[in-house]
Figure (spheres, rainbow, N blue to C red):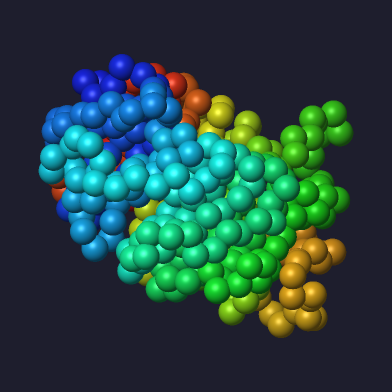
Amino acid sequence: MAAKWDSGHASPVLSLAISKERVIASGAENGELAIWSEQGTPISKVHLKGDNDVTGLAFSPLSFSKVYVAHGETISVLDTRALGDPMEMFTINKEEINCISVNETDSLLAAADDSGTVKVLDLQSKKVCRTLQRHTNICSAVTFRPHRPQSLVSCGLDMQVMLWNVQKARPLWLTNLQHLAQDEEDLDLHQSPDQLFNPPLAHSLSISSCGNVFCCGAEDGKIRSFRITETRFEEEVCFKAHTQGVSQVSFIGQDPGQSLLLSGGNDGRVCVWNLKKETAQPQKQQKPHHPKKSASKGKGKQTAETSARVSSSLCIEHGEKVNWILGAELQGSKVVLVADPSNAISVYQLGEL
């Protein structure tokens, strides 16, 4: 049974973030922002000007009271100790922002928007230092890689996943999930002949703490795990996680020999997946590909073989479409926070996982 944090918002909650000091921020429709203690008590609230939905949040990795807030086409910087007027505001995107990410040195912020563009803001000069334009549809997620402050990954509703270096205007490597899905279908002997095909529109991304493995959740209900090697990445694992689109994926830590991944779906389920160590081993040397794209036939065979090594540690019937999930350790217990179309945040205990 979930605990409910229900005294922070009047509108549906859309986004969540947590600082290293375990302060939680939540953003909702109509410009609502709330700051919570780890006990679930709202510390402060603010209504951002413009009434635009708060679609993305990111705490500064160096100044734990500083939170970056995406609402509409604007990014506001606020002090969680005294919510009020923003300390700074940046309007760098031409369309609504879907996701923001700050690198670990707090020097760059990336913002992905509905036009498919990723704007990279230099937080020292306060200017856009790079505009990344390769997605042909909405860019739904972007995230910087740990230990590599110039490197980031993006995905979008064009079904493409891209690896970038901020110093270059073109992606180092890209993969079209539709091509991967076709290979997977060809080798999936258990697929029902009348099963409707949902295109693998890419909704969400999460990168593990090592910075070399990332997962992507898509509309076809599958989660795909990739390993990055220098300037390219290859699919290692693909598995059916939800009966509808995977709206959120999020790593919740890496213990020796395993990685735990949270997923939330439009089917109202929240799951914890154990990506075992053997699924994250480097693959054998492949023939070289064109440096700008990856589309290898036969890749689905490896995917089908490794997917059996993924197991679900826990699956919760949440009952509502998942807008955001966040794994955390609060008051000494591992929990998952879930935002859905209600105005409350649900908190589930994860026990010894």
